[in-house]
Image 1 (cartoon, rainbow, N blue to C red):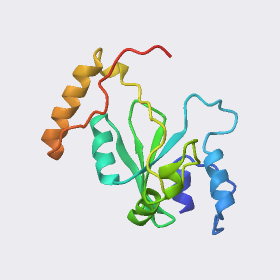
Image 2 (cartoon, helix red, strand yellow):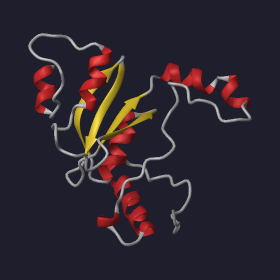
Image 3 (cartoon, rainbow, N blue to C red):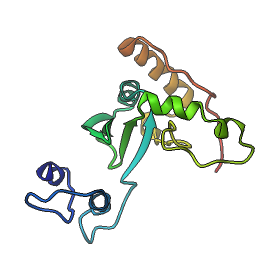
Length: 168
């Protein structure tokens, strides 16, 4: 495993036949960048998903492909990378049992104030991917991606809300 980590650019405090405990594996992620090189971009974003296959399919429409597939605590996971970005999207498939437990939580369903997101919850607040190099119109890009999805995977994209100009 250590050779694979080195091949991916990890420069962690490990070597030889040592095993990484959970604290060390978190530290390895922190030390991925070469020492002395300032960060230029986000390293990675983890997204809890209900279907890793559907997410891999969707992200492939934006030019991402799996660079590594693995399991973490029994859950399927994949790192998705694109040739035009140094960032990685880490997909972690939440097991169905945890999804059901999360959905059945009365505290989440009846809460009137924001509650901490349970570890079995899907997603994150949002994931923003800059697609500026691919288009000048988000509506036409969505139409194009939906047609490509239909051709490749037999399903169109479902869009919750049409794009609109928004100043932040």
